[in-house]
Structures are given as structure tokens and as C-alpha cells.
Amino acid sequence: MRRRVSHALMYLMMFIIAFLVLAPLAMLLLASFKTPMEIALGNPFDLPEALRVDNFVKVYHQAKIGTAFKNSMILSLLSVGFNILLGTMTAYVLIRYEFKCKKLIMGMFMFAMVLPFYTTEIARFQIINKMGLYNSLMAPLVIYIGTDMMQIYIYAQYIEKIPFSLEEAAMIDGASFVQIFWKIVFPMLLPASSTLGIIKFVEVINDMYIPYLYMPSSRLTTLSTALMKFAGQRNMDWGKLSAAILFVLLPTMVIYLIFQRTIMDGMTCGAVKE
Image 1 (tube, rainbow, N blue to C red):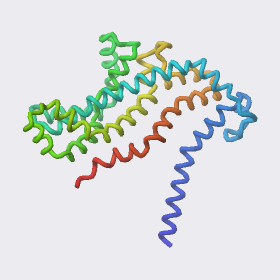
Image 2 (cartoon, helix red, strand yellow; image 1 turned 90 degrees about the vertical axis):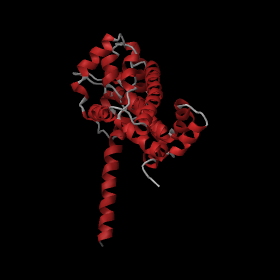
Image 3 (cartoon, rainbow, N blue to C red; image 1 turned 135 degrees about the vertical axis):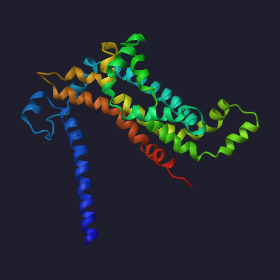
Image 4 (cartoon, rainbow, N blue to C red; image 1 turned 180 degrees about the horizontal axis):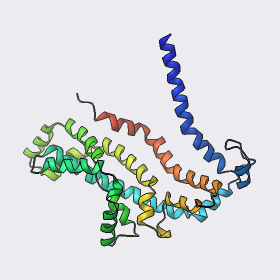
């Protein structure tokens, strides 16, 4: 009897969670095919009178979705590439080598992770502006490629599983530290790199704050900042806004559906020691 009750509660909780996740998506999908009059007078879950694609067409042209998609892809792909490169090298040096101020550097990474970002935003904005990167794609790119503690932790789990005897054998054969990293260590970090790369890709493509603050130019709009064109303080076109949100959600959903197994495997594989 207890087992049945526990199973019933578990299924009930899973149903509630699924409803809370899927209900907003269903509302967005239905609203994107409705007219403003249908949205104002009807129920959010009412079916549209007809499958109109006018909202999608208007959003594509008004928000310049093609340009926004190109800018988002440039930022996401470059950020992922540089982030993986810097993250693997940083984790490898911190885990494998002993040097002065190692604990201090690790502490600085920890401190940066728990420090609220808005407390340093003014200083960061001034640095970006002094570097001459404001209102360019390089401004958010410099911010995105930074390595964080989560990356170092996940990479550390994989590096600790790599037998040090492989690196010693390569040293005996005359390989340099750079060759050891690129030819032995880095290929073994590809599962973790794929997982962190997908997470970083989704994080960058969904970010609205940094592109909106550092790239105000209309030619530098991204998928996330394109939503601002349909949201105002006094009026809001919910049909167009819903269609725009679906445009933004599409790359993220495709990435998750294709690589969901890779994400889970990369997060858990390196955490088990044999």
C-alpha cells in the first residue's frame, strides 16, 4: 500500500512538473497563430480559427531574423570554440601541475563564481569601452569566452581518470608539454567538451542582457534581443511576440533533442572513479 501511494505521488508530481513546463509552450504556439482580437477575447488554450502564418512572416521581416540568426550563430560558435580551448588548458594546468599561487588562483575562480555579476558590471563596461570593443561582436565574445569553475570541475573529473603513465611515456619519447596536451589529453576530453559546448551554446544564444547592453546597434541584433521589438511598456503584440519567442526557442530545442544523450553522458561519465 505504501509503495502504491509513493508511486501515485511520484506520478502526480511528474505530471504537475510536465504541465508547468509544457503549458506555457502550448500557449505560445497557439498565440502565434492567432489575431490580436482572438487573443484579447478568447481563452489562452483556445484553438485559433485558422492556421495563419502572418505573425511569423511579419516577425521574420520586422526583427530581421536572418541577421539576428547569423549574429547569434557567430557569437555562439566562436564562444564555444574559445571556451573549450581555454577551459581544457586551464583545467589541465591546475590539476596536473604544482606551482606557486595555485591555491590563490583556484580561490579567485571560486570567488568569481559566487560574486554577483551586477556588482562588477560598471567596471566591466568601462573595460570593454576602453578596449574599443563597445557596439561590436567582440564585446560579448570577450565576456563569453571566460572560463568558470563549473568547467574546471567537470574537466578535472576527466583529467584525473587519465593515467599519468601515458604522459610519462610520451615524455620519455621526447614529446613536449604542448604535444602531450594536444595529442593525448585533449582527445580524451572530447566527451566533456561536447557537453560543456552544448550548454555554453544554449546559454549564449538565449542571453539577452549582454548583447542588449554591449551591442545596441540594429545591425548587431541577436535572436534574443530581437524580442525587444515586440514588447513595449504601453502596448504589446502577443501574437508577434509569441512567434518571435518560437524563433528563439527553435535552435535551443533542436540542440537539446539531438544531443540530450551526449549532455547526460558527459555530465556523469567523468564523475565515476573505478
